[in-house]
Amino acid sequence: AKALGSNSQVCFNPAMTAEIQQRYQLELALAAALAAGQFELHYQPQLTDSGKVVGVEALLRWQHPELGYVSPARFIALAEETGQIDSIGHWVLQQACAQLQRWQSEPKLRELIMSVNISARQFYQPEFIAQVQQCLSQYQFKPEQLMLELTESLILADLDDAVSRMQQIKQLGVRFSMDDFGTGYSSLSYLSRLPFDEVKIDQYFVRSASSGKPRDWVIVEAIIGIANTFGMKLIAEGVETQAQYELLRQSGCYCYQGYLFAKPAAAAETARWIDEHSP
Ligand code: C2E
Ligand code: CA
Ligand code: CA
Ligand code: CA
Image (cartoon, rainbow, N blue to C red; front, side, top):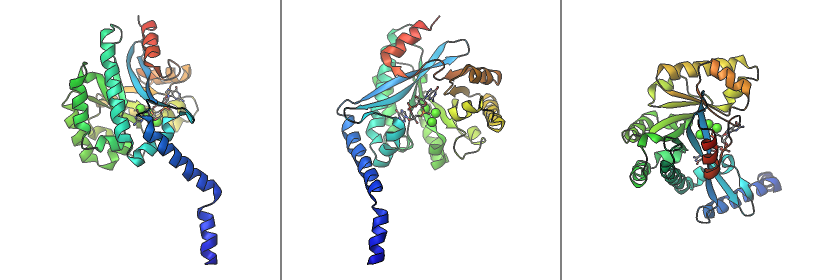
């Protein structure tokens, strides 16, 4: 009994209890967030070499009255575990599509591509394909303007099932972007087996451009080569410095997203930014 007593002390030390409590609090807050209207989408421009804005990535923002701003890096994983991502992800998809429709009346915005992050659980949900279809019929824009960002960990879960789902969605005209490629455990050859239309070079690799890690830079060049070989669009994300931009450009990249150009911002602000930066 003594051993058990000391064991349980190890398991339930105050620090850990606080952590569990915090997590539980976050979970409760998350459950109420959607109905309370605490979510908002921000949009970050994606530009070509010539400075033309070709698209935006929708990024979820959560402002809680007491907790303040909570980063998606903190709550998306939790929402995946609890299943809350089902309703949050559906809301994100609808909001992004509604925004894309609103921008159809603006000459400088109507051709934009809207990239939306899709979590693994959301993608494998039985209703997901129908939800995409429903958005396409409810909102007015070309299906090719919708780009769904998937991560490689999602694909690795079940390669054949992922490919078959992707193909069903691609038949609707919607496209796919490989997010965070190279950061997980898949090999570069995976790209050839998957029907992606675009590859995003992760900010980890973009940083290696200027951090003097030549081994990482070799991987960037390999990704660029493979994407070009398979006819996939390329985009580098997290571009923060002119040096990174120039190195990427020299290596054959031609599309960029990052603080060097613009930060994610609310729809009106991003629209204004794009308007001011359009020729
Ligand atoms: P991600 O998809 O890799 O998104 C890129 C992240 O990099 C965003 O962080 C963006 O704000 C940030 N970023 C953009 N440019 C720069 C830069 O130049 N420097 C640096 N340091 N960061 C930059 P954010 O918005 O905090 O989102 C974090 C992650 O949360 C996202 O990573 C994505 O995995 C997830 N996430 C965000 N919104 C959604 C969503 O609606 N659904 C799902 N499933 N996940 C989301
Ligand atoms: Ca993304
Ligand atoms: Ca990414
Ligand atoms: Ca990331």
